[in-house]
Length: 350
Ligand code: 5AD
Ligand code: FES
Image (cartoon, rainbow, N blue to C red):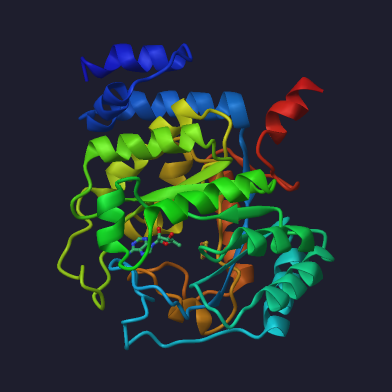
């Protein structure tokens, strides 16, 4: 901790941190002061309100074969499903009825949903007076432009890792450059862009995690989600462990808050798989967003990116009530507006 103290002090003075500084913060043995600093910066720049986003997992078909992911195309045991456009719209209507102001449409890279189908779904959901976030993978610039014209507001695409060689090993057939291209296209098209990385991938170093944070700062992202890697038994990475990934993810979140003080940082669901209080702890280490599951029925279980996913047996209304109680139990409140990047600071200035 002795080495990290001056770096933390510099971060709190809003001075630039180098890759070596960031790596040193990620190495901290006693992270309590780092977490406290992130919590302070979070309160100052985004306030005590937590933004909720309703997650709708609409298809687990995927053309890709990422070695870490439970719905990779080579997993014959994944029980595939695809919601109809009508069902997706109905699920979004239900989420809006529960008070959500953002709906996140997430799926594997499922080519059944062509641009026309997706744009129709987006247009219908926009009529519900909610912000629409897409999380459907790599597309062409033209496709991204079409979704944007249909009304999509935000897009989530994790870079997963900025270590290009590691990325291309873990995501066979995919190109890191194309993934980065997607993020830059999305930015140029006027989306609020969310990215993020997996923490604890085999072969990943602290230096490369520091590079991830610098990549987010450079883009710059409007949001970034940090997810601990949790090995899925039906994937080639089944023998890996999730040991240490929880705490390292908290550190990543905390350092990210110091580097990008006003962005939206979700307390990811995977955090709660590894720790019963995972999302609340994340909210106390820099996070200000939660994405409760609003998917209905069987699909909740079938959308299994990693094992031990929480709330698979609950209904969307239960999750909505549960998360509100949890958030209020730590003295925070649920925000009733759309929760775009920078809203809090804008409101403070007015
Ligand atoms: N453990 C944790 N997160 C995972 N994801 C995919 N597989 C896993 C896993 N085994 C994450 C990826 C993806 C997001 C939707 O889910 O980071 O971008
Ligand atoms: Fe789903 Fe708590 S968030 S039950």
